[in-house]
Image 1 (cartoon, rainbow, N blue to C red):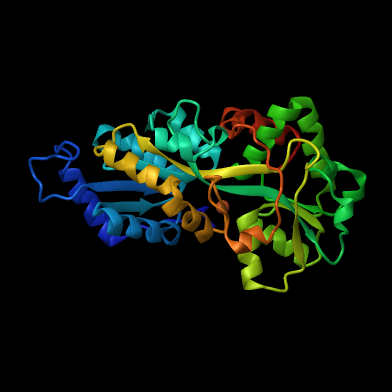
Image 2: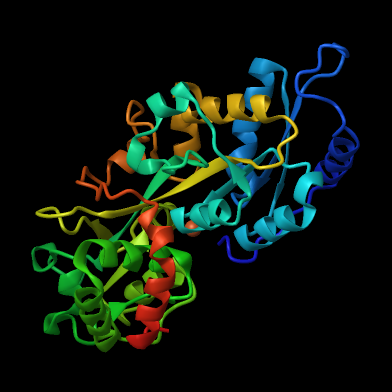
Length: 346
Ligand code: FE
C-alpha cells in the first residue's frame, strides 16, 4: 500500500546532496561537457514501479535519473519547505486529486510540449499544463463469483439500492481514491443526488469501512460482504497471489458516463534546476518506449491510447471509461469530503 511508504535510499541521499551542490549550474551547460545532466524526481510511486523505467532511460540517453520515494503528502510538504533550493525537477504521484493539489499549491510549472499533447489525451492532462497522466486505473465494482450474478449489477448508483442491504464493503472515505470517485459523481450527478447515493451505500454497508482495497476484497472472500468498489490493479495483485480468487471485476455505468478512472502522473517542479532535461524525461515516459512497461509494472492501463495494456490487464475486458477531465477530482475534492462526512461515510 502506498499509505505510509517511506524509502530513502542511501544512494539517493548522496545523489540529492550532490544535486543540491550543483544548483548553480545552468541546464545543459556547454561549459562542462564532462558533466552528464542529472534529473531528480520526487516520487510517491514505489521504487519497483519506477526504477526499471529510469534505468532504461539512463541507458538510452546517458542522463542520470535520481529519485526519492515517499507518500504524496510528505513529498509535497518537502517541496514546499525546500522552495527554490529543492533538488527536485519532477514530482510524480498518484491520483488526480493529489496532482491537482500540487498544482494548486504552486509546486509545479506549466509545460508547453507538442509531444505530451500528442501522447496524452486532453482529459488526462491539467488544463494549465502543470501535469500529465502517465497511467490509468479504473475504480470499479468487484463481486463474489460465488454469491453474485453479474446480471444483478449495473451502476455505482445501484449499489445504494435495497438489494445490496448488508452486502456492500467499502474502503475508508479518508482515502483520496474515494474522494476522487465521489468528486466526479458530484460533477456529473450534482451534490443532492450524489449525497443520496453515498448515504445509500453507507446504509448498505456490511461492516465498517476497511483501511485499503485489498482488505476490502478479502472481506468479500471471507463472506462478510458480496460487492465492493476497488482499483483494478489491487484486484490484479490479489489475483496473482490467489489465482483461484472467487472475485471478478464488473464495469458499471456502461449505458451512461462509464467507469470512474483515475491516474498516476507527473509534472515539472516550479523550481526545477534541469527543466529541459526533466521535460524530455516526461515526454519519454508518456511515449511509446515507456508507456507499456510503466502501465504493466502496476497492472494499470497506459495513459497513451496508442499503447495497448498488458495481456493480463486486457483479459479483464474492455469497458467504456468516464471521459470527464480528471481535474474535477481535485476541484471538487473538498465538496466530496464534506458530502461523505454528512453521509456518515467514515
Ligand atoms: Fe493505490
